[in-house]
Amino acid sequence: MTDSIFTRIMAKEIPADFVYEDDVVICIRDIAPKAPVHVLLIPRKPIQSLAHLSDEDSEIMAHMMMTIPKIAQQLGLKSGFRTIINTGPDGGQEVDHIHFHILGGRKFGFE
Ligand code: 5GP
Image: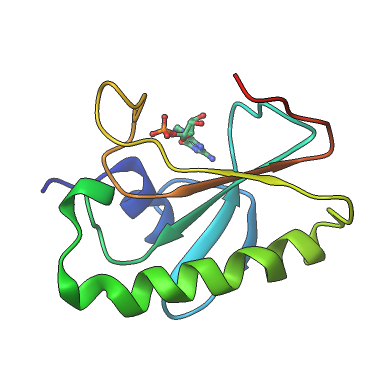
């Protein structure tokens, strides 16, 4: 897998607005927000997509799930938020480095 834009952001080669980072993940504001709050939670490991997970990634994915509500709380999303993972071309994935979208600050319906 080649370096994604997210790998370059992690390496601080490209600027981004970081809201959280630890040894396993980073969280940055989306450059084209679809809601008043729109951040991306990205593992440091360059896993291509949800369809490319291996068993050894289970700890990373668990860590991501556990980190989402902490970030939502930090961002003041008291009345809820939406999480999205796009997978592959039909899923609308544009960056081939797995990531959760965390969106909030407005109400969402089901498309
Ligand atoms: P996907 O479509 O792959 O699920 O989501 C990729 C997201 O990355 C999009 O919402 C897009 O706006 C965001 N994005 C793409 N390039 C950059 C960038 O250089 N910086 C930031 N902060 N977000 C980006």
